[in-house]
Image (cartoon, rainbow, N blue to C red):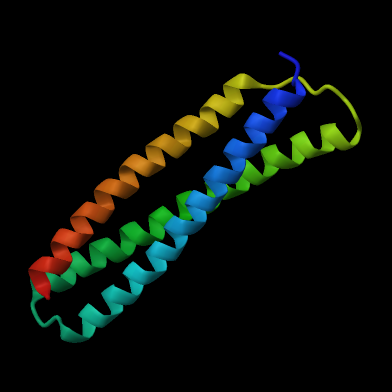
Length: 126
């Protein structure tokens, strides 16, 4: 499959949406980590501390996945940009783009579940 100008624009637009979405998630994770820090000073129960630690580890893991996704999107965007600058028609690897799309969908789903569980936790210990 060869990239047309329309398909190139569509892929670029989708990349921009994903990057903006990931930046938003990264900002949210910073807020959640700050909330964890506040709870650490208040939490005196062992059970609460165990849950705090679990969320801290899960937030760290989500940030790692988020960083990897941002990197992969950036690399894919660079390849597309190079092709445009060289005025080449670069074959579009639909499998790789679909892979990125699936990774984003998976991240959204896992992140949404983590967020839901975190809010339940916050309501329980505040």
